[in-house]
Image (tube, rainbow, N blue to C red):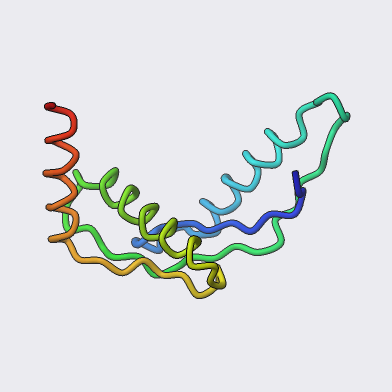
Amino acid sequence: MDPNMKLMILNFLRKQQKTVEHRIVQYLKDVWSRPSQGGRQTLEVEQVRYPTVPAQPNDEDCGLYVMKCFERFLEFVNRDLQWSSWNPNFLHRDILSLRKIVKNTIMD
């Protein structure tokens, strides 16, 4: 596994970015440096991006927004484009549609 990592943080609030970034990077380094069969490894985060993400209008759709961002990211990666240009673009009505899909899937 490559010890050089690019990190993308999805945070539409744009609050405490450096604090969040530091905590995430520290956690990843701690996990990465645990002893394994090959000994200790060092992780270096070579780039951190904060793509512009759609704002959620409430406190209850966090998971759905993460799911939609991840869906958009997978679509993007499958087209083999530059990760530095990725920004998820969707509307809240897309989240409402996703909510129905998730509900129907769970209820089936």
